[in-house]
Length: 457
Image (cartoon, rainbow, N blue to C red; front, side, top):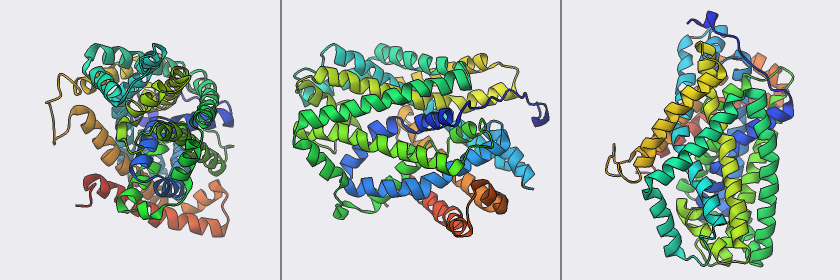
């Protein structure tokens, strides 16, 4: 079916607030609550955190704005949006490959993201059962290791999480994505504030130790690895390079101020990441645990704290509900670009497109599950299926999409029209031009190089 005969089934966000909460929900996910704290712990705390905050605004925000801008111009799925906008600018339709890689990236990411979302959901039940009570490092590590070896449990929770994701997306933009985020995002905020308050109360002086760890500049801990890791996390934290924000932008009306909305989304994303650190590290320090525990910080280290403090079971339940909700607000955005594509380019309705896409992603997720147990010896380039998909998407596909988007927007599109659309004066547009034409592309190339040579070899 040609672009000209594409079905016109495009919805619109009902309000700026609904769009903003949906975009913030996409950004606020496992990256903020799982990955950000353990990266901060591994890389010395404040030096990483402050560098990350800087990059969120000078790198992440401009790319976010441009993905929305292109999406709003095209009013279609990311692939055909890129093609149509390119043609309207007198450029080749081959720019559509930027959209193809982005949509494929979000599709692949959801296959293993849903598996991790299933872990968080299962840990709600474990906390409710009092499994963590009196636990030590050996107990929580064995618990997580045994869980990864249990194919049936992993499959059940992956299925539950994927079903919840598909159910919300199938309801549509307004009744599904927007309404779901309007409910879950305030709930996330309440839960997070309660967790921070409880951590401050229960940990005593350790709360101030956590504040010092996260915010008192310790530039001696800053090195090239930490800088590039902070840069990469700032890029991925906002769901950039996945086709998501371009898809969300396609549902936008002309009345939405992209810059001010993006600024709000970035601030919300940063607040959640920082508050997550303030909810986690006081408990880690109060229980003499190690902040640099790596990816096991949430599923191995933190349950020790929950199991050895007054009211720890309740806190554990609240924390993993919070983690599951955050994962869900991101997973629905990961599913949306592919569903939007099928809905527009085939005769499928939204529900059918959601079911078909979800089943394929669910099946790929099973391969990720098996990579932890029965297929643990199946590797490619030295990585199991789960790690390979993570590496392929986060280290290659997303930066390539982001680089293509920024080059297209900064060098291929009419800059006068972009300036008018963003309502920038001459001074700020000059700053904008320097960032988008030179600084951001170089930064993304650095992310790509770092992905191939993480130790600087």
